[in-house]
Image (cartoon, rainbow, N blue to C red):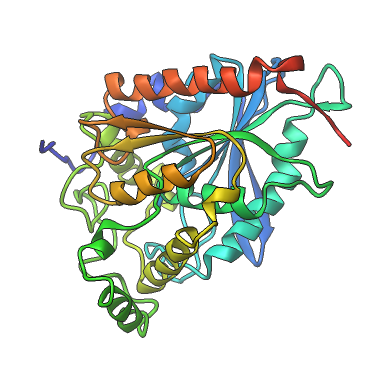
Amino acid sequence: MTLEMKPNHPELLTQERFQAPKDWDWSFRTLKNIKIRYGQSRSRKDYRAVVVMFEGLGDFGEQYFELARNLDARDLKLIVIDLPGQGGSGRYLKNSHKRHSVNFSSVLEDLHTLIDEVALSAAVDPEDNHKRLPIILLAHSLGGHLALRYLAEYNKSSRCTSIFACAAMTAPMIAMKSVEAFPKWLSPLIIRFLALCPQTYIPMGSDWVVGSKIRPYLDYVLSSDPERSNLQNAFFSNALYKKLIIGSPTNKWLSDAFDSCNIIQKPNYLEKINVPILIGLAEQDALVSNNAIRAAAKKLPHAELLEFPTAHHEILMETDDIRNKFLDRFFTFIDENVLMKPDNGKRHIQ
């Protein structure tokens, strides 16, 4: 299915669902000399849980305002983190369009610092400051990749208590389809060759320009929804959101992603994750490997795989029938695994 991509979509940003929820606030934390932006509602309402969002490649918090409203309606507080190198966070290179990388392990360290300092504080029960509301991890694509690594390597607070009670993710990047297209022996050689020019765009990559498709290196849509598929373009085309513009990833990002995918696929790596995980798989995905996702789901001790035959890569930006099906299961999933537990899943702060 091909959707028309217009140079501007200003009408989308006037829709209430795509605007900042009430009491939304942006904050920054500087880690390793780069600013990381995160957003959350400062409402004083009584929330049942805190949901931390890890975004996909090139994503930004504003595109998840609709999700924040959906969660808030269920008394779930969303904290969305712009990964370093994209969104409202700082960039690694002078050309801010280039989605560069320094090291995925370094990003995980920064995410852990933010979660320890921000999410744990936001989850303190306002009715009893000796308890903490349950914290849930929600992630997409690259964010799903980082979420799995985080759960395997970091899911402990500075006081050695578990942070995330459960997790949900859509189209997690276990392996990249573009890499799978080559024989296993050849893909590492190609990636290492490209990495000799680390700050160069990946093949066919470029800056973002007005009128380009959602990402300049994609010639297909990430969603079959006519409005949500154009939302990023609407933000990028608006002068007020110029700071959000991002183009293609660099060869260094590709190399780091490849190495990190190899870590996830190591024997007995995913098996040590002991929290329940809901995984949404988009059958029409052209970016990440669904075969790798299915294989990973079998390795995870407590995983539920939900497949969507007509969905493209971005399930949370898909048509209402697809998006709502995932969200409906997400809400029952956290009820069953967290909120219906004794004391509504709250934990004593040790």
